[in-house]
View 1 (cartoon, rainbow, N blue to C red):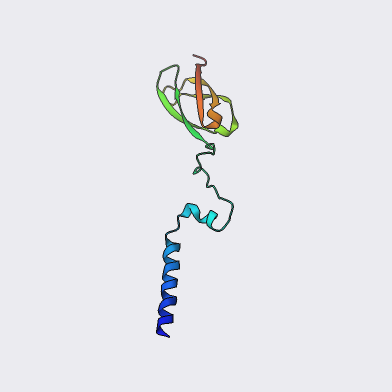
View 2: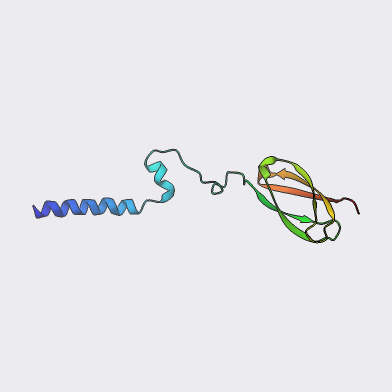
Length: 109
């Protein structure tokens, strides 16, 4: 009887040992589940937002601002964070939402 207990213990250790070596990314495939993609972790997904650099056409200072690339092309007016002059900002979404082209123009004086 002690030999059987030893065999059961060794089988359990073998199974537990293999279970602890499973990669987290392979769990879905192991159990036949549909893969789950965490937001922002899958390189095939477009980012929900991004930070773009805006160069002020008045004082030529560069600062960053957040934009939502899922909205597509956008335009708005904002004040420069350095000199407070109004700027017309136009965002063109490129690379299927993975990047943006920024254009700025002077408004007012």
